[in-house]
Image (tube, rainbow, N blue to C red; front, side, top):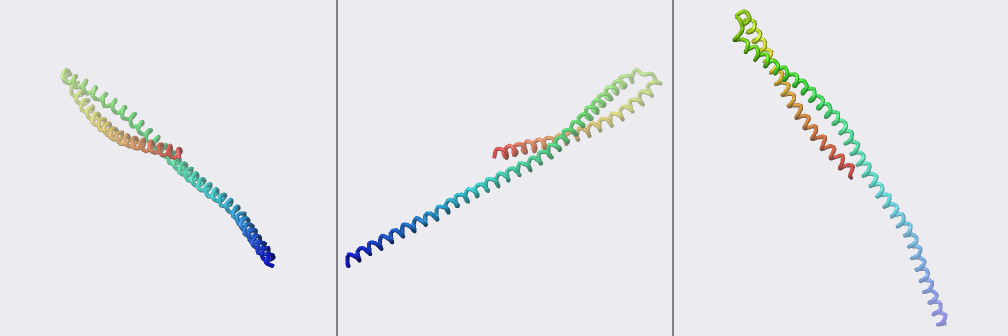
Length: 173
């Protein structure tokens, strides 16, 4: 009887050990897919973050590109206006120089002029002086506009360089 009890208890212990081992195996098997699913879920989360970052960078780059395009248009317009003012200024300076030369010639001819021609020459000199005043005023106004446009151009150029640097940084990221 003792022997039977010993065999029965050994058998119960063996069955309990097998049941424990079987339960652990099933638990591991149940956990294994969960860890695989966790790894897959983690991969998906990482991919989502990477796609969000790429989308954000692409949106920033596109926005910067649109801003660059608009600024390029402004930059070209300012450069065009500056070129136009410089052409007008060159013409005005040439006109002033021409009037100065003509006035000097007329003033040099005045002492040698006859009485009849002297009155006519004095009228001509007065007219040249009026024209010179108008031409000088125009030249000064154009120089002031050129200075303003040159400042605008330099500011646009600095902004352009800054935008290009930002675009290059955005591309490098």
